[in-house]
Amino acid sequence: MHLIHERYAGFWIRALAQLIDSVLLLSLVLVALTATFLIPDTMVNTIVRSIIFLLCIAASLYYQITMPASVYQGTLGKYWLGLKVVSASGGRITVKSAVLRYIGLYLCASFPFLFLFVAFSSRKEGLQDLMARTHVLKMKKKNVFASPAPMQVQP
Image (cartoon, rainbow, N blue to C red; front, side, top):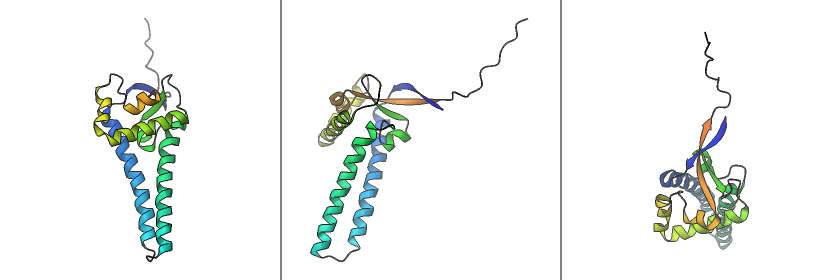
C-alpha cells in the first residue's frame, strides 16, 4: 500500500480525530488517577496523586507535540483516520511547528468559535495551522501492487 494526497482534511474528520485522541488521553488519566485513589488517603498519597496527575499532563503534552513531528505525521487519531500533518512545503513538520500547533489548539479550546476556521478556510486550515504554517491532509490509499488493466490485442 502507498499513500497519496487526496485533499485537505475538513472540519468533521479533524474533529473525530481530536475526539479519538481525547478519549485515549482521558483513558490514561482515568486509569492513573483511579489507581491512586485505591491508596488510603494520607498527606504522602495526596502528593503522589499530584505527581501522577502532573505526569499525565506531561505525557499528554509529549504525545501532542512529538506525534505530529514523528514519522506518523499526526496523533493516533489522525493516523487511524488517514490524516497527515505536513509543513507548507509538504514535508514532515518540525518540533517547533508542533509546539506552535499545540499552542494554537489550546487557544482554540479557550475560544471554541476559532475551531470554525477549518470549516470556512479554502485550504481547511485551523488557527493552529496558520500559526505553524502547516496543513492537515486526507490521504488516500493506493494499492501499488494492483494488477494492471488487461492489454488489448490489436487485430
